Image (cartoon, rainbow, N blue to C red; front, side, top):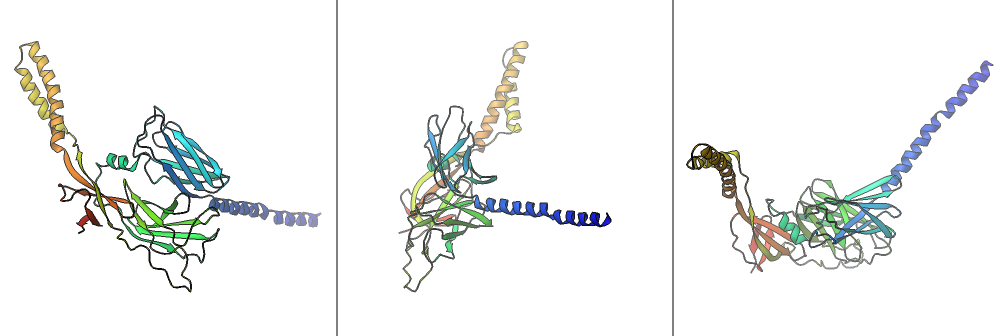
Amino acid sequence: MYKRIVLGLFALAALLPLPFVASQAQAQHAASRAEATRIDGFDVRPVRQAVAGRELDFTLYGSPGGTAAVRIGGATAGLVLVETEAGVYEGSYTIRQRDKITATSKATANLRVGNQVASAILDEPLIGRAYARRAGAGQRYASGPKIDRFDVGNPPPSLVPGEDLNLILSGTPGGVASATIVGVKGKILLNEIRNGVYEGTHIIKRRDRIAANSVVTAHLRVGERETSAVLGQSLVAASSQAPRARQVARCVDCGVIEAINLVEVKGEGSYLGKIAGGLAGIVIGSQIGDGSTTTVAQVAGGVGGAYVGNEIEKRVKTTKHYEVVVRLENGGTQTLTYAAQPPFAVGAKVKVDGSTLTVLQ
């Protein structure tokens, strides 16, 4: 009897680790699913104005076989995207009367595959770029974002389906970065892996129409400002053949002044302006009528004077500055701020050096 009990305990001990092994396998499986769920790109076709009846067309590129949805800041409803082809999700949101969508509204996409969810925030405005820039004109920046370097990390030997293209961008930290390749649908999101360094990978698909010299453009957005840069190297590794000449001979920091905008930033009134205006109103009110009539006039004068005093103080505190918008040769834009009217004219050819413009001859 004792021997049977001991054998039973050993058998039970042998079975105890099995749940742990099973849970470990499940965890590994879940981890692999999490790595497989990814968003490669998230685009929108912006509208000129966010008026009722207009449509915002969204496209998401990522893991196939999932469920995709978009949340829009200021919208009263969400949007479910339909998978039109493997890994490509599309949908249109019709703006409603009650929606409060503005140039600064954000759109967030979620892609669920099984129990794993990947998310991405749209890196471009829902309203046309010119309108978004005007809406954010009151914000001040010492200088616009800057791209210092844009490379392909470990270029593949050939551009065949399944190969990885690793893109690396170095520039202003704290931004949102992406890249586009001619012949590839959508954007490649570049994540900030460390301060000012952004990386992203595109797995070449069969539908891609890509070549070693395809134009690759990087975009870096910080706040309401964006800059761009064009890749200056081949997408494939160097072979025994003579290296091709660099295609980017143009000045990436050069461009033409597209607009010079005068921006007024209205000041805020304080209690001092209200008090001063209110006292002046009471004095004036005391000169009107007698008895109760004088009292009513004093009260009315005090209220009106406080309002007028507050408005006068706001006008006194109003500041003005100028924003110079430069259209760069690579198609991007950069905006520089000046406290006084700058000595430039629209159409002038210039070079951007940080926060300074140099006129080119």
